[in-house]
Image (cartoon, helix red, strand yellow):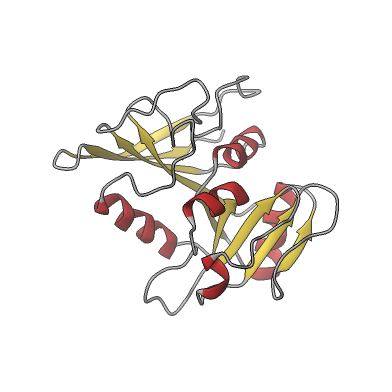
Length: 208
């Protein structure tokens, strides 16, 4: 399997957004710069359709000659052709449909069907995507965690914000059942930014 990392900003109470699903942009410029740096090392970026829509993200690296693949996971495969993703030059766009029906995507989007693990293998074997970086959302990361596919976790802990609410999602979605088993990670970076009220953290998966 390719190396898979995930990146999130979380509030002081461990939420990635509020119950009303606020878009990104509530953390510091330093956090945004870190997001861009993490994208630079990726061969492919991965995101759920809901996060793509709410954040209006284009999944690009500014001023970079080499752009990562832009990969979207969606049950129904319906993509808004007016989304800024389709008007911004960048890496090839791949859509994974995990449900039935016919896709509704703009021309040029490469459509895949099946499960997430098979999709990641195909990205590696057919497109040389050895490092894949996921930027949300929580439901997608929950599935990746259940399959034990996550090798690295990057978090910006934003102590300046409290979202609250039982229905506000965490890194693995709206709180519910536990994962089928524990996953052991080693904390390899702890970088407090007191001037921003944030802390940058990185964990790496320990596999026996």
